[in-house]
Image 1 (cartoon, rainbow over the protein chains, first blue to last red):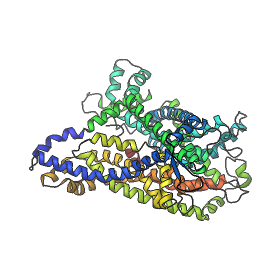
Image 2 (cartoon, rainbow over the protein chains, first blue to last red; image 1 turned 30 degrees about the horizontal axis):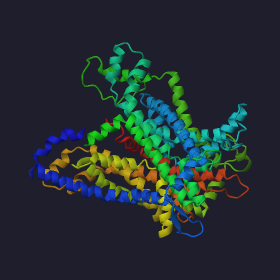
Image 3 (cartoon, each protein chain N blue to C red; image 1 turned 90 degrees about the vertical axis):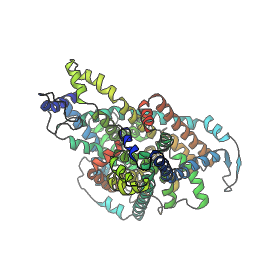
Image 4 (tube, rainbow over the protein chains, first blue to last red; image 1 turned 45 degrees about the vertical axis):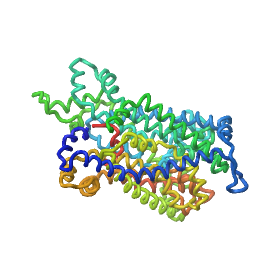
Length: 315
Length: 304
């Protein structure tokens, strides 16, 4: 990359390599320090405080009155049914939505990579849902599936298909389907663009060689495109999974967590704000945090070869 | 697959001489490759999936009463009553004001801090650079609830709960790393020769950054600003946890708590109108800045 090709130019400096290096390192620290300090203040301090809060129990009646209870809040949370239900639902949601987004995103990327009249239009159209605020995405799909006034419910009723008289947001499976759809609609463009970027760096020569060898289009796709696309798809999968595991807006607007659609973040929010359980709410936030971080570590360790390479190159 | 068709047509003009100087694969032929009818079906399916929900949202926002509750495919008596109701709602106007202030301030602060950090990370020699970048990237994956929960307690004690400042500060948690990450990949793309000559003239890294990089980085800064702005505007969890009154509530929270014009009306009409109102500016932004947004979203994701 750029760094390698330019390093020869460094020796030409009049002040000598070492002096310049030291000055550069000092400047680098001074330039990054403000951001790192700010991030420590707005990210590390709150999470540290959440940890402290989660180890205490708070009086509901007297503000500020608390006592140390050790891991009691965690034990309460982990032994009750709510955490595990939310945990399961969040992973179900993430699994469904991310797989759909990757499959659809790959298909969209392949379409966008074709040279045809209307490609620019297709790209614009595909990108539009990405501009929508998540809350609005939820409302949009609520209007689609609402009883009586929804498009989907009306079409199903007119065609005499099952599902027209279902209160979609009132039953677990259906509600989850709407939540997944709302997420897929809004975020597939993101996956598609990442995968498209990966597609565009595959050179035409690779395909010509395959063609000379008599490979069919399908073979070329299965043996060239997909393997070469793997890093881009994995990257899209990582970004999308991390985001999906934090899901909050969609169930909040669509079901308020009813019908077994409560996510980990929602459960923590409900305990904290609605039920005023500061200790348990904080323990649940820490559990959510640890879950998401554990998944990202697993991802980077087992699937993120390309990320490690990027990281290596930075050094 | 059909990708091949496109590539073959692209390669065709260059093929006779088998010249080594072939067009970069990125720039495909601008012409019309004939698409297989099945591919057209896919193209229209994708367009339909993207656009129909928008149509239905607008459709719902233009209907009231019976024509709303019947779910008419085309509004028989289109009305702007829902829109009027939204604009006459003082809470919605306050929410718009709040959202603009929060998004503008957060984006500005994040960009100022991030541009220095990103320059150092993109260009300067530095110890533990990979570790710092990984750390910054990992903050973007933090679940917001882990910040919102403790902030809820802290802010209530020191009086920042339900204030705009009380929202701007935690929103920086996510805006800042996003800005640093995106800007770092943009700064890396600026050719180094220009700075080198500045260094030869005895410039310090700070002056090289200010005089050489910043002017060249304006497009990258603009793109980053757009992306950060959209993400701050969109953010919901912190906003809903840390506010309780219309004076501090931003738009997404206001809409989520929207109830119709009157208790007899189906509120979805008004809610749809409010949703359309806040979506239009973002759609225009995407239409105008499409190229920038795409380049920003994929910046650093895949190396070219």
